[in-house]
Length: 297
Image 1 (cartoon, one colour):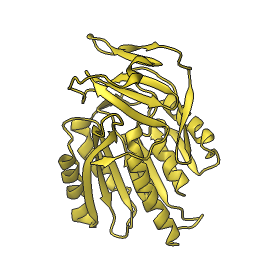
Image 2 (cartoon, rainbow, N blue to C red):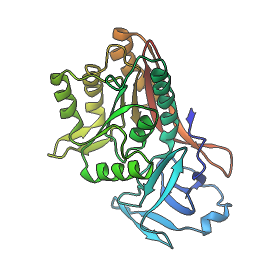
Image 3 (cartoon, rainbow, N blue to C red):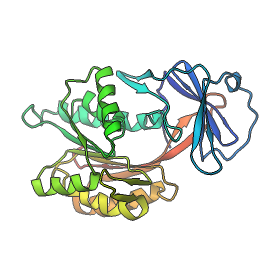
Image 4 (cartoon, rainbow, N blue to C red):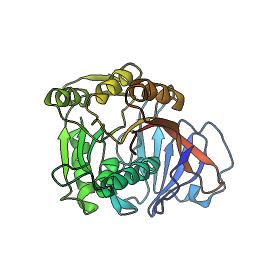
C-alpha cells in the first residue's frame, strides 16, 4: 500500500463505528467513512473535542453540525497551502491521501526537467482531469510543469485558483478550464495537442456542465484509451485514481497494461493508497491508484 505519511497539518486520529476522527490543522472533524466497518473503543480524547461532525442521513446525504469551527481555514503540505471549508456531502475540499501521488509524480517531473530536455518554449506539460480543488495541479506546477487544469465545476476551479494564490503559485503556468473532461480530450486530439503527463481523478458518478453523464464502470476504460492519444511520444507518466470499490488495483493495472504497455512499453504499478491512523499504528485504506511510467522515466 502507498501511504501518505508525511503530513504535519493533517492526521487520522482514530476510526470506529463507520466514522473517522481527523485533525485538520487545529480543528477536529468527525466524518463518515464507508471503509470503517469496525466498532472499536473510542479511547482518543479528541472524540470528545469535536469542532465539526458530519451526520449521514438514512435517506442519503446528511448535514454538518459545527462546534466552534471557522467557515474557512488552511493547512499546508510541504510548500503548498490549501484552503479548507466544509461543504456538501462531508467533504472539506482536499483528499489528503493523494499526497503520496503528488510526491511520486513531482519527483518524476523534477527529474525530467533537470535532464535538460525541456525549455520555456517546450515545457513539461501535464493535464489534470477531474482536477477538483487543485492539489495535483499545484504539486505539478511546483515541480516545474506547465499544467492544464480541467473540471466541470466552476466553483471547484475557482477554489483551485484560490489555493494557487495561497501557495504562491498565482503566476505559475496553469490553464484553468471549466469543461467536460471527455469533450475536452476529444478536442485536444483534433487540435494535435500532446502532454508529457496525465492525471485523472474521476468520480464514481457525475455530470458535466451541460448534463453529460459519467458512470465510472462504463466510462473509465474508453476514457483512458482516449487519453492515450494525447500522450507525447516520450511521455513520462499517467496516473489514474479510483475511489470506487469495484476498481481494485489489479483492475487499474489490467487497463493500463492493455492500453499503454503493449503499445508504448514502460511499466505499470498499482496499489491501494492509505492514511496512517495515529492512535494505533494501523492504516486506513482510501481507494486505489494505477501508475503508468514511461520508458525514459
